[in-house]
Image (cartoon, rainbow, N blue to C red; front, side):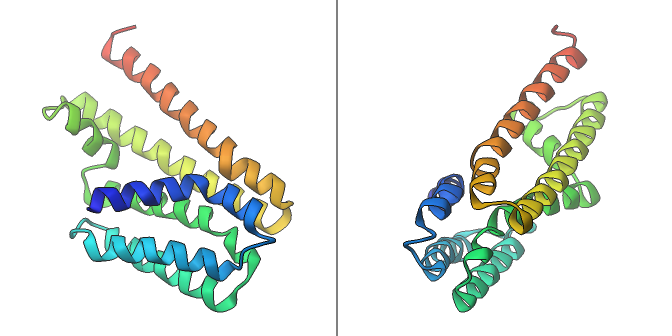
Amino acid sequence: MNRLIALVLLLAGLAYPFAVYFGHQHLSPRFFALLLGGLWLARFLTQGAQPGSRGMAVAALSFCLLLGLADSPILLRWYPALISLFGLGLFSLSLKYGPPMVERLARLREPELPEVAIVYTRTVTKVWIGFFIFNATLVSALTLWAPLSWWTLYTGLISYVLMGMLFAAEWLVRQRVRGHV
C-alpha cells in the first residue's frame, strides 16, 4: 500500500505544475490543499520508520494546512521548492548519518561495493545536493518574480530535463570510472 501511495504522490508531483497552471483560475487553492493533504496523510499513516520520512510528511501536511487556511494562489507555487528541499534534506542527512543516498541506491544493485565506489557515491550524493540547492533556489525565484507560465515551464519540464541530464552524465562518468568506456 505504501508503494502505491508513493507512486500516486510521484504522479501528482509530476502533474502538479500543469494542474496549477490550468486550474488556478477555476479551482480554489483549498482544493489542491485537500488533495495533496490527503495523499501526504495516507503516506504518513502507512510509512515505516524510514529516516526523515515522517518529518517530510509532517512538513508537507503543514504546508497543505497553511495552503488550505490561507487559500492563496501564490502558495500553490511553493510546493516544488518544498519537494526540492526534501531531496536536499534527505541527501544531506544521508551524508551526515550514512550511508550516502547514492551508495544506498548502488547497493540495491551491487551489495558489495569496493572502496573506490563508496568514495564515488559520496561525491555523486554531493552533486545531487548541489542540484537540489540550485533547483529550490530557481523555483523560489520563479515563484517570487516570474509569470506563472515560466514557473510551469521550469517546474513541469525543464527541471525534469535537467535531472535526466544529470542522471545521464553520472551514468557516463560511472562507466568511465569502472573502465567500461
